[in-house]
Image 1 (tube, one colour):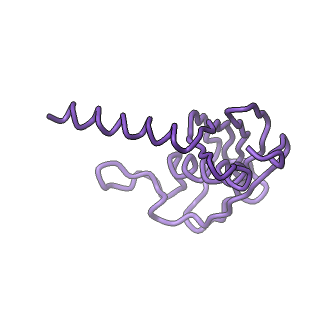
Image 2: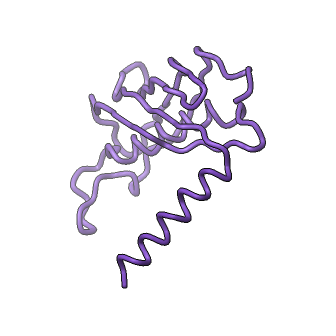
Image 3: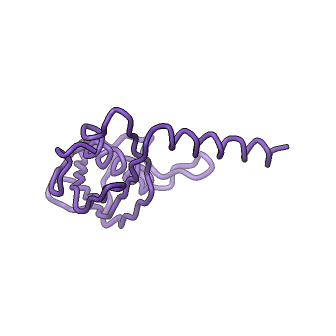
Length: 138
């Protein structure tokens, strides 16, 4: 990772809650609000935006952990802002605190960890997982 990645770096994602972001099970929308899985997705994007500009050419990040607490709803049509802040950093990983707001209301918070690996090492891990899946499917 480049030395420009520091504890305190932040990145924001702003989204408009759309109907496809509502919780649905077996194709049936349960609530017309921002789903927890959509929040998780946007928190991952925000954390990735903290890391991506600071990767070396030979490096790639991969998600290792995500933990969130969904505190309040946001209705369809609401603008939600998600912020990730780097709070811990070592040679192989970045931890971000992630928060989501609807206006001034905190609607979610949590933590996301990304592991940083050489691209060739990550490719070997992914290729092995693919081979293992092919073997299980036989």
